[in-house]
Amino acid sequence: MTDINLPEVVKQVTEAFIDYERALLVNEMETLDHYFWDSEHTVRYGVAENLYGAQEIAAYRRVCVPVGPGRELYNTVVSTFGEDYATVSTQFRDGETARVGRQMQTWARIDGRWQVVAAHVSIDLSSLQE
Image 1 (cartoon, rainbow, N blue to C red):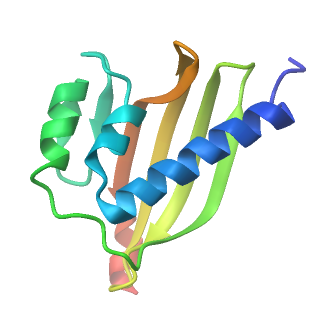
Image 2: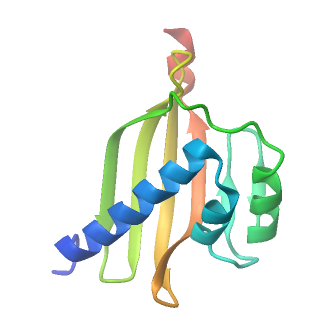
């Protein structure tokens, strides 16, 4: 397969991911909703919740504790496959504790724009022992 990590596609997904993270830090609901695929098939597994469908994800966002402004990402890896499918994996710290989080998103270009179709957020339990 020669269409892995095409530079223009990596750039597009990276830009979408950066904008998603910006919206997450300022708790910009409309932008976060915009980035999740508006489908009952969208899945988001969180640290303490399992959400099925864009409506559940949007409802959760409106009652959960917002991400703190000290959130720092590292080891971010963007991988694209063809022109319409990508994954973004990253680790993060919340800026307040030693906890290390992990986040994975599956992105697909649907109707001409990049959207998260599945996401998983977890805490690395080994970081709690440091």
